[in-house]
Amino acid sequence: MAKLPVLVADDDAVSRTVVAAMLRKGGYDVRLANDGEQAWTALQEDQPPPLAVIDWMMPGLDGPEICRRLRTFDTPTPTYVILLTSRDASADIVAGLRAGADDYVTKPPNEDELLARVNVGARVVQLQQALADRVLRLEEALSNVKQLQGLLPICSYCKRIRDDKNYWQQVESYISVRSAVQFSHSYCPDCFDHYVKPQLDELDRQFNENKG
Amino acid sequence: MLATLRQLNQPGEPDVVGEVLALFRVDAPGRIEAITQAAAAGDSAGLQRAAHTLKGAAGSIGATELQRVCRALEEAARAGHTVPASSSMAELHHAFAQVRAAIDQLL
Image (tube, rainbow over the protein chains, first blue to last red):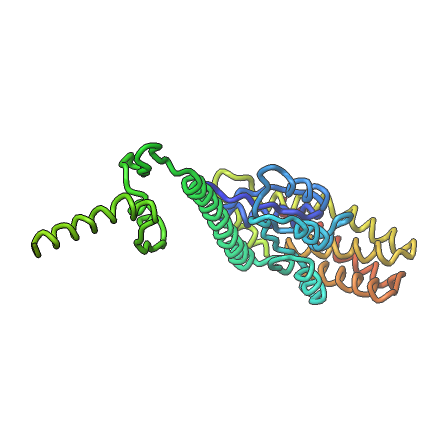
């Protein structure tokens, strides 16, 4: 399987390098951003990394602001964001999560904890992608069904209908196979005169003949 | 902490410990300078930011004493004490000198 891209954004080169090395060892395709503006640019590319580990405190665009901007996008596959926060700032954590972060890791990060949390993010990202793909396929299938239902290939002489295997069927059997419609049988006045009345007359005639 | 960093080394990849320590060696003096200037200018927001960044970097390489001093500076700046006590600045320079000496021995 291809390595999952992860954006690492931190204005401190030392922290950025350490976090990047941890994620590379964990099997991720790491992309780097040196500040919030670079991170924001990277997250708006055509194929943005689905996961981002972003430092809370950066000059210019900070982590929570990036989260807030990301959350204004209406997308079936939102970026999974993990904020890096100071160990001694629990108010940061609440503010970060409120801004729309999915998770946080305290700095300096412990390798096992960081990877465990990023792996959770990767699972969420993969589920989101699978779900989005499935919804797309269902929408396509549904529009095909609607097209089929809207077009009934019908013979202009005998009024029979052609199904998708090219068999010609009676309207009744065609529709009862494809829907929950139930048929109740009766006949119209024209057909009564044309088909039913002659049969009744014939029965009458036979009855009178037998009697006579 | 360095032992932890060493575990991040992977075959065929650059030495993570060397890279990180070299980055710290290059970046840290600028951070110390930023702290000193912000303190001199009475800029508590700038002091808080600069101390915070150096704290993070120190934490990443396991320089716990420098990390502690930076945290104290950051918290004091947040509390509004714009000009840190001269003893705090002396502590900062002392802690950094020790880290620098340790790095120079390793590199």
